[in-house]
Length: 451
Ligand code: UGA
Image (cartoon, rainbow, N blue to C red):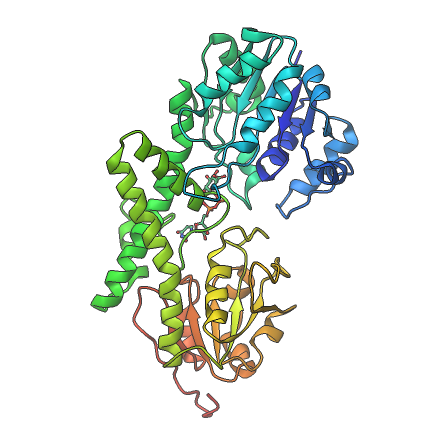
């Protein structure tokens, strides 16, 4: 018989994991302390945008294989395997991860565990957390040492969460016993049958795989953004440089796009948390490297504001600027640590009148982003603009006709913060173009003299 499963924490990771396991034929219960969220999910509604997830949740709440509750005792009575998928944000007073939600989840679940079971951490945590939680769990659970802890990091990307869950490129499990490994092989049997690599490690290595993976991706992005700084100074072109580098199979093309830098709910805080943990452990080399990765990333945002100044030939104050994009990347409505919103807010703070358009994000809260006005369409956002600033490379912007936009704006100036557009085509439509790591492109006057 298949083991019953609970998933604690119903954010991106938890909901997708729970729905994915239901799809694989398990009976799953999702648990969260947020009663309103649980009520929505129980009705089959996903409170955020993730392609394909709505359908999956609806299908399995209707089939009865997927339920949601606020009651930890219900989850404890039902499940044989409990996944921990709660958030580990950056702490308010420093770079380290805030583990209060992980600790709280264990504290709420453990007192109800009165039979042997497996608790499996999926949240991204500092190395050493699993060992600490093992002690906490066995001390609090009535079933004591028959309750085991394993660690199974998650590598899903927002915007691809469903596909990444159902067909991951690898599964990593940190386990302390053969029993735990066997149970996790049962949970992932469908995926393993397809030959997906299954790596069995100790707890510490499993915890580290996740932060090391995200740090490597962040390093790759900051590397190319550092090259963009050099390219600008040398009069070279970072996109051509990246293309040439990427043809070396050892380097590869992915995560080598220079621009406004990385954001989101994961990479920025994971780099910082790993840096803090590496420092605690005496890993000075890792700490120094990650510190530089973070600084380059923060600088990429500031440098985008400099490009706006260059393009305008002065301060943004008094200018009308259309910002294209608010989400931290295309395919999501997530604005956590979004480079787009950070730059848009900085431009507004510098005195510009900023109108933001994002196909998926319709507002971001006046408190979080003072000075930003959200617009309902691309045309409304760019009409009468003195400068168009692209910050999230949505398909709608990539496909936009520069000739049409040139007719809507007051002055055809483009800052392509993501290096996502065809600059020659935009210049041919009359636009002057600035972008990170590339030489300025002057707009070509149109043949009829309109631009
Ligand atoms: C990231 C990892 O890619 C996942 O493997 C991981 O599971 C997840 O974090 C997590 O820890 O939960 P995600 O936050 O969805 O996934 O976003 P990414 O696709 O990695 O993009 C991160 C940021 O880097 C975005 O702001 C994106 O625009 C930026 N980026 C990406 C660049 O600036 N340049 C690039 O070449 C690639």
